[in-house]
Image 1: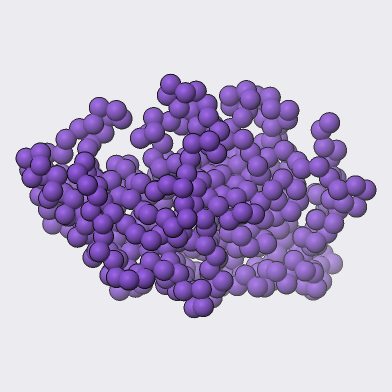
Image 2: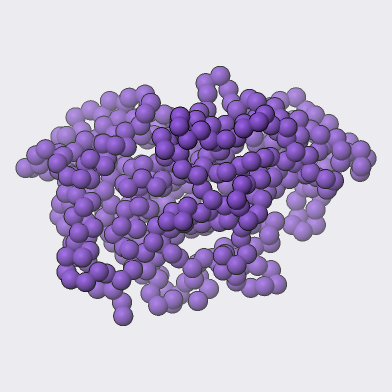
Length: 442
């Protein structure tokens, strides 16, 4: 039987996330889990960032470390009470360090009679700027599947978020109206949907096809095997929690580079990639708002030496003439010469970068499209950067930030109840693609 609609999910004015959750059970028995939701996941070619058209079709930038949903607001908007539990949760999500952007007379758009309105602090993860705005409720919509049919059924719901001034949209993709935080914090988009819909605290990102919320059936279309449930074939890794910084940290214990010949491990200093649970510093964190992977200088030097060694070893073995090229722009590792070609998939035969994960069921390997950058002057550069004098592009002083280039063409499935992440690596190298059940009629 289909779930009965919960009309209280979209009242004229939503004053508390607590009320949103409470109204799920106010009509009687605990609601059965709702069907998972699916939305398109669109890659912006200018910024490389991903957006989801979930706020009534308006794109929001996906931020894996974001704690809030925020957007520009209409001239008149509802507010959340400053005495509510939701307001208390929002006030705990203030960014630790940011450059303040004047929010202007943000309270001028409040509905008449709004008193004791909660003020939130939206944060732009690209520019590092923040501001102030009313905590409000955004009308949203996404598609769900019913009884496993091919038809997608649009559903409307609400999510608590912060209003933000237009100026806070700087450096985001054109047309984006804000940011959707995807962290484990209670006011992130996945956390709110899990609380409202009782479908498990899970989400999946198929770059760049779709995002799902809930325990959605996601499949890999494998050549010669048909559609296979991701859990049957993909490795998974534990996710680490930083008590001070939101975001998803990986238990990386080593980095190596291979190119046909045996792998070349990076000679990292002892504990170079460890996360310090007391201070929140160090570790390896995922970022959907950083274009390329960035490494602390000591980590980058060891990685660059391993990459160079792999190139030299293979060049001697195959007599190929691959040599270092001067740095191009921010890319320090650049090469030119005759790289061989692969037949399947049709691409250049270049080294593979491996992240060795503690407690994982496999190694996360980065192939061509996950790091290769074609630079001016016929150079091929490695899209992994060394941290500059300005520090890391994210908070917390991590040892390494895994950026969007390395996440492209991956299927990532997050189970936040078990703190696990399944990962595919470049789907082209698996000769695969990803689908959800309605696309294949399961």
